[in-house]
Length: 382
Image 1 (spheres, rainbow, N blue to C red):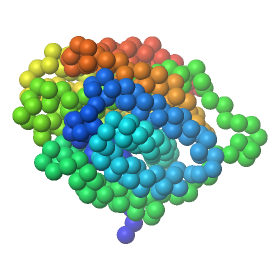
Image 2 (tube, rainbow, N blue to C red):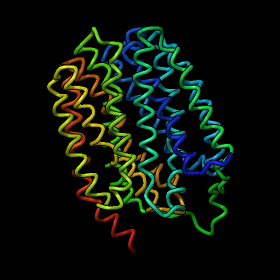
Image 3 (cartoon, one colour):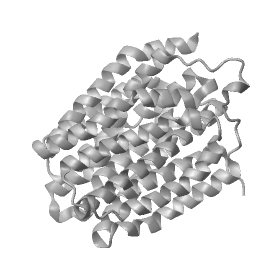
Image 4 (spheres, rainbow, N blue to C red):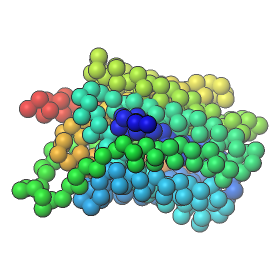
């Protein structure tokens, strides 16, 4: 049986989404079991983001010694093992350790599956990058609702029995179809790869603010719905599920929109809807309206990060992992700081304040895209 590299990358992104969804779907139960305050939960989220960014920013260094295929085959089982540990957190200390470990593992996996995905997109010569992220979002949606129900009805660790399936399937596909690509060693080049740092800085900032908004949904969706309707705690994963479902669906069709209308126009149109969704959530509407708002946010944020990641790779085709690492490092500041700020807002004011702040963050991302995207496109034509 043969499997294409494109299908393999889709399965890898789906496995990534399954791990993330399994983890965050159980957040309300894990937070309760661990005895975390909302402020501490936000602070730990910031520490996790710092760990995530640190590992992603090391991608260029790792790629000097191991190719994409090797790293993915190692990090997938490691991420699953760390997920198992995270589901067993029953104290603040164990939760902090679990958050750091799973953030490091997922950060490494995120970078290298995107680097391999960018390579496949450029080899095929057509925009398919958004579909990869769509697979991750759809998988996240499915496993978030499974995790929220299983964690309430049984225990958080039971969900790993379901998560093992996509992880094993992805590993088998990678082993069978992903080729060994040459590692990037500086001494193999007459001169090191020169990155367009100025453009990558703005690309990184836009991607960073977008990812920060996505992280806010992942971390706080279950908390908001549990607060609004405690009697429906088992279904608190619905907000994240609808967010992931709409985000994934949009990403699956996003490549066609990108090809027809262009990345910039699609991103700005979608971001406008996402900002509106965050604004609605700021008023903490009922359970049903909140779920609908999360769906709008899913559509709104769907294509921004894939477009910016793809752009970073295109700006430096001879050093994709290094370019992506630099962009991620630049966009890391809001990803580290905002979770702590959101935790403080939730503890001091309300969960609605969390989403009001996220609406402003998404607006900032839109402004950066408008101001800088034309420059990046011009550079690609030179």
